[in-house]
Image (tube, rainbow, N blue to C red; front, side):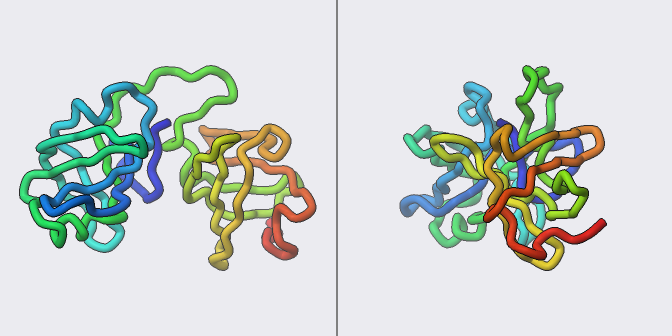
Length: 185
């Protein structure tokens, strides 16, 4: 899946996130958001969107696949200290025409930032992240007051997804949303 957790330019798509530093040469550990084969191995340049320092373009010097993601080395990032400045940054590339998906499948970049409401019309918040688990994805929804809700991405819970209108409707079930977590429309 292609995704992003921060507001990005509409012509860019997030393909991963820097999780940490690896070794003494400035390599970084990257979690992939992409299921496109060869996406990372073919990278030449990426735009790094860092919530602390903003966006900047970096030249990719090397990429190595690991069981948990990728190790990436960038030109000019050759110390652990320099690499540490990238932790938390989102890797973005220019968006290419995306292949159509089958019904009930979505690109993460289309879901992130979407407003989430209950079937009763109560605002839960905005979808800010998508966590992968062995059984199903978990949608992280942040309410206006800063509360965080973890919503299983199952058909039983997620009732509708309207990509053009940027709206997701979820079934409110006991224990899923705290009392008062959703605000009246």
